Length: 117
Image (cartoon, rainbow, N blue to C red; front, side, top):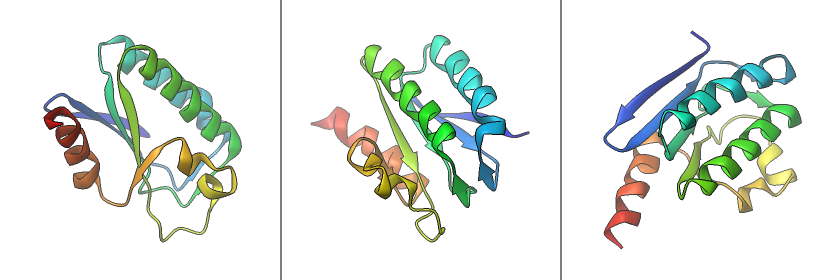
């Protein structure tokens, strides 16, 4: 399965099981994520730790999904393997738009900390 989702309490984790997240999969990813959001999820983590590369089209799908979740008073966070070669988040300054974590557990915990504040 290319995309999967798992619940951790109120947080939904979407796994992207691709080494290269490119235009070929961007539309199906966006449709998958829209279904999850329309199902009521508004605290979402996209786990991109398996991706070695993300292109601009796939990044656009992430941005569109972030906008939709924010409209539902939610948030979308990313888990990104910082050891990968692609620096797309930093070159496009998306590291200023998304909350990016190296570890899934840290991303999940960040939603708990927000609620406690």
